[in-house]
Structures are given as C-alpha cells and as structure tokens.
Length: 158
Image 1 (cartoon, helix red, strand yellow):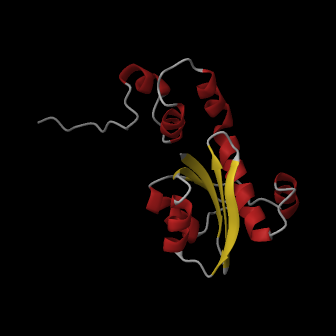
Image 2 (cartoon, one colour):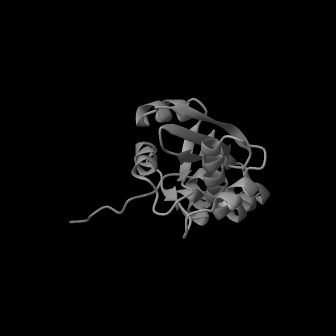
C-alpha cells in the first residue's frame, strides 16, 4: 500500500500516514526518534508516495525522511497556523501528532482531485500503483498506453 506521510520533528516526533484515498492508516508520537526509527515505523504500514510538512521551509529531518523513501516533500507557501491545524485534526489532542496529521492531509489535498480521477477510470491497472505514479509525476497517458509505472529516463545516443 502506498502512503502519504506527515512528519513533525523534534524531541517528540509526530507522524501520520494516510492511504492514497486520504484515510488515516496510523499516527502517533515517538520520543527521541531518529531518522532510522521513523523510516522503520512508516515502512511497517506501506511505501510513501510523498511526505508532508506543516512549516516552510520544511525541516531538514523531514527532507531526510523523504530522501530515504526517494519522494518529494510538499509544504505550504506559509507555515500552517495552530488554529488551522486544530481545525484539520479535530480529534487529535497531541500537538505533534496533530501537526503531522495536518501536514499529511495538506499533502493529500494537493493531489486529491487527480487521485479521485483515477478512481473513476475504467482500467485493469492497479489503481494504487497508478496513483503513486501520478504523484511521482508520470503522465497518466504514458502509464495507460504502456502499462509502465516507472519513469523512463532518456538515454544518450552516440
């Protein structure tokens, strides 16, 4: 399963993972966690398609986690305000988990329309993989035409 993750770094690291339909898979907070701890934790639930941050610029810790999964970081033009995060994460009381969940939701919303369009497609292709490929920037026409979910790199011809 592919995921959209949100990370809130600090002494207490908040994390949240949504599936590509925007539904919460897991969230929580881990004290004194390093990159490896978070990578292992997230990997138990799936493969990230994108990482979200609630602040601009995204913290180095978030960028490193994204790099470990070879995915982009989505972050707002301006850092999210606490009241905005409380509105998104109404039922989450822990501030670190709330911030991570808000970051994941904002990242999901960035792609939500395109992901919902995939659900409407009549295709035999794996829709989870198709959504992941769209988030990675692969044109949908290319995927449907070739059935290839991977980015084709141009080869140098000599």
